[in-house]
Structure formats: C-alpha cells, structure tokens
Amino acid sequence: MKSLRIGLLGLGNVNRTLVDLLQRKNTELRERHGIVWSITGVASRRIGWRVNAAGFGVAELLGARSSDGFAGMRGKQCPGYGDWLDAAQPDVVFEATSLNVESGQPAIEHIRAALEHGAHAITANKGPVVHAWAELRDLAARHGVQFLFESTVMDGVPIFSLFRNSLPAIEVRGFKGILNSTTNVILTGMERGLSFDESLQQAQQLGVAETDASYDIDGWDAAVKVAVLVNVIMGVRLLPQEVKREGIRGLTGEAVRSARNAGTPYKLMCRAQRTESGVFASVRPEQIPLTDAMALVGGTSSIIQFETDIFPGLTITEENPGLYATAYGMLADFVRAAGS
Image (tube, rainbow, N blue to C red):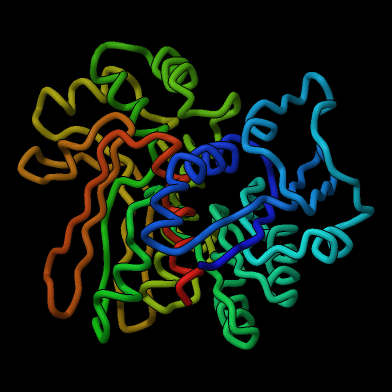
C-alpha cells in the first residue's frame, strides 16, 4: 500500500473536480492500485500557501468559497512556494493554474521546483508542455519522478500515454482534428440559426466559454494544443506563435448555414504535417465534406486523426466531455506516477 501526499496548485474548477473524483474513486484506488492519499498542501491566489500535515478534508475543500475568504479552511500559511513544499512534503503536485501563452510561467517554475523536491508533477496546463517539455521531462528523469500532462489535449483521452506506452517505435507523420470546444459549440449554434453573439452566449451559459472568449475564437487555444502535440508526439520544437492561425471571428451566420446546407460545414481545423524542412502546422476554419468524419463532430465533442508510418489513419473521438473528463486525465496520470 502506497501512502501519497498530494499538493494542489490552484483550487479552481479542475482541481476541485479532481478532489471530488479522487474521493469517488477512493475504494478503487486503494483496493486495485494500492494507493491511499491525503491532501497536505493547497495553494491559490486567494488561499495563499496553505498546509495541513494531517490532511485537508474533501468536504472542506469542495465547500471552500472565495466569498467568505475561505474562512473555514484549516492549516497554516507559508510565506512562499519553497516553504510550502518543505511543509506539505507532497509526493505528487497537481498543477492547474492559468495558462500563460507567451512564456508558460509561473507554472514552469512551480513544476521545476516540485520535480527538484522529488515530487511527481501532473498538470492540465498546456504552457509548461509547450515551452519546457523536454527540460522538465529530463529533470523529472534525473530525480526519479515523472512529469505528466494527459489532460492538456482532449481532456482525459489517453493520447500521450497511447504513444508513450502502446505504440513504441512508431513515426507520426501528421495529424488533423477539431480540438477546441468553444468554437465548435459556436459553429454548431450558428448552423441552427443563432447569430455569432447568441451562439457565444450559449457556449458561455454551458460553461464551455470564458467571459472573454477571444483566446478560443481567435484560434490561440487550438494553436497551443497543436504545438503541444507537435512537441511531444512528433518530437519537433514548435511554439504556438509558429502555428499559422486564423480564428472563426470573420464567419457570419449566413456563411456558416450556407456551408452546412451545401454539405460542407465549417470546422476550426487543426493540422500538422512533416515536411522536408520540419513541420508545417495550422489552425483555420475549413469547409469539410460530410463524407469526412470531422464534419460530423459537433458541440463540445473533439476528434483527432493521426497519420503514422504504420497506420495511415488512426482516429480518436471524444463525445461531449465535461470537467470530470479533464479531472480523469489527471487521476490516470496519478495512478501511472504511483506505479512508477
């Protein structure tokens, strides 16, 4: 039986859902995987660097609200991240803070320090993978721990572990897919007669889109995901700024409905392809014929098709995921790390 101490960086929707999922899967984790766990450190902008060596209660964490200043939470405050690591002594750090597209900071520094402390680092944040994947991978190996990030693309679908564990010695020559839920929901709504603004509002009400959804609408989220896949699975260094990018802001409802009626609906397509000079990657709206499985993916669903030297078309589809899918990717990484 392995007793693992957990540190949470961020207590937003992702890590809160993860806490709930850990509790739901507690019996299975203990009986099938020999894992018992406690959350000894929690940190966020509002909470500060809080530690409880005896372990925070699940109900305590899920019931915490910023409106009351987290007044009901126990534990002592630490002055900074290093002191927090020393006091909480986490075996695993779950990092789920906000994405910094430009640099990946401060998440990279947080993960680096966790690895150097001897803790496995598991993240849902794409920034550290895009900007520092090779460095953090090598650092983790030197310290005998793991840096894992299954939830960064397509929620908890096992894309990275598929290639890492199940498809050895395979060459990925390219991929195409629909990887941004917000734009897919907006386009689906526009096909059904809504205006761009009405469809965006619907996506916000579903909790898929942020109040400021420009990051999704202008294709940045998709470009970052493309860069993550190219870096990790294709083994080529690529930054989001190097992805040729066009969002859906310029599409009108009339154009979207006409395309659907013509049997070639618009989708925000992500693509990457090996060339003699490297990898060419793009994100842009394209009209896809209904004979292509990509055209049938609507709402919050996602799809990706890999072209490899062995499998000409290896397709993975995810239908209407929620936050528990993202949290599951982190939980699956937790089990992998515990077994290493």
